[in-house]
Length: 366
Ligand SMILES: [Zn+2]
Ligand SMILES: [Zn+2]
Image (cartoon, rainbow, N blue to C red; front, side, top):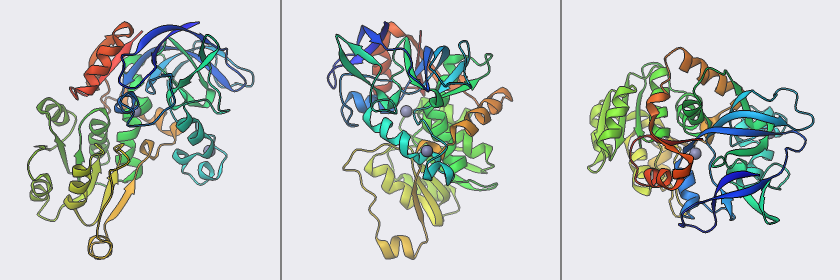
């Protein structure tokens, strides 16, 4: 048994319920969650913009302590601190071998079904299965996940900060560093400065960008962006593309990272990118949001590259230790991204905080 925050129907308050939690099967581990971030994708499932079978335990940005391991798990033991990845990369499929583990065939199935790798779920109530968002479901005191989703971290890292690595930081920092491959002296714009965008700002600066323009609707997020490395900030609402071009020599930026997923910001991102530059789409837009560019004049003539970035093109076994190292060196700011902490009992307040687009990240502590 454990206590989990269950979403039974879209837009209904989450209910903290006693649920049955099956012991880890082969290749799985049980984790006592120490902290979990509330990410915009949780909200998208909450509002049904991101379809997910229900009832479901939300949460896919967690960190905690291993308390039990299933058979065949050799690299983790009870007591290990871990960050949870919502893509259980197998290391063996076509994509993993090609160096694109973010597209892992086996992980994708679990992720989209809200279940573990074998298609089943470990949470249930009264004999009825409860889905696990993204194969995790971290809005819970305990969860059972694939062992390869649990990446060991040093015991010295605070779990409230470590949790953010599991989604927002890998996604944003990775989009800048891994996907875009930002180079020293590049000019970069980041549209949307929540937890993901602020991580992209940090990634861009670390990669050596000379100009990092942060764009958001909220002043407090722009202030935070400046503290985390943005050289310029622009309040969204005006002609953002024009304002960004003005800061980047009139040509536009080398790289625009779109972290919102709205039609206007995607159109803006394309417009503000220089000829030959890259537009990197990170935001999770609804099904009606489109990339619409004239093929010849918009792409051929301009040589603009428009690409997606899933989970920051991360190899989690490589990138989680990398991010931990940067945090320990004082280069990656994680504590600053946690702008509100809620106890687990106040899960609905944490969801409201994320819905309201305040701050960077709300984290729930257990
Ligand atoms: Zn997320
Ligand atoms: Zn794979």
